[in-house]
Image (cartoon, rainbow, N blue to C red):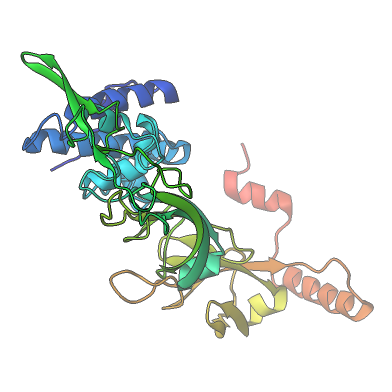
Length: 377
């Protein structure tokens, strides 16, 4: 089934500004949110479709590629063009639009429909950006990252209550953590204002965590970066987010990859492109040249008569493919002209020029113009 135009999905014109795009997405997300449409697969599909459209149109780089090339232009750029597999993916990506999922205050969805942390009882997910060198991204690497996250308080074991005491059931929500307001067809469910959605009230807070049940701590986490990861990709590290209140499972950690540019290589999908300088004589006579590769060096045979800008392909020396195998390394030939010549070099080149003129291998500038466009008569 063909994908709908992203501007059509959000209902905005192509010249819409960032604020209008955000407002349109927020409106659709509220309308089609699964908590408002339980069991409605069509609403869930629309919810994910809107998130995919917003991810592209809210990013200047992705939006420019989409405007120029359509859906194919953004395929492979993170989630762009691939859709979302779960609601948690969408919340972790765009929670800041609704007040920050996992940011401590709860999103607008959580305020309307109740709940805290993850929608499935998990702890809050975390997001971070990681910049890695180009060659580590291409070959893959294991990185140790440092971050601060909330951990269960060791003094109260996460209860938030002073040792020797226990939290009491909230008298307003009776332990449910939510209250309902309204009547008739439309009833809004919100977090209980008395207990903050916990369902419990702490009369004697723990002095170490001040009743929060958690304390920020520095942690080190090893993250495996797969070979061939692209700039803008998002990696999910399961169960490395914050713990849920009351001892529930942890959320996830989402790592957004930023790949540094390389001084020698450029990436074109699964191929690596590099420019290699050669001399005039090497191009004319042919040559075998040692060329840098990701794995060290390899011998490249330059055919006699090679021209500036010719591209030579070195099979299997490119980027690792997810389906197996590797792309190629494409070498772009740059024929260099020496700026300084010694007497012998000048003599040899002068002789070569004279031979080319006698053999008719060179034409004057005006002869070339005449042969291209005619005499003009």
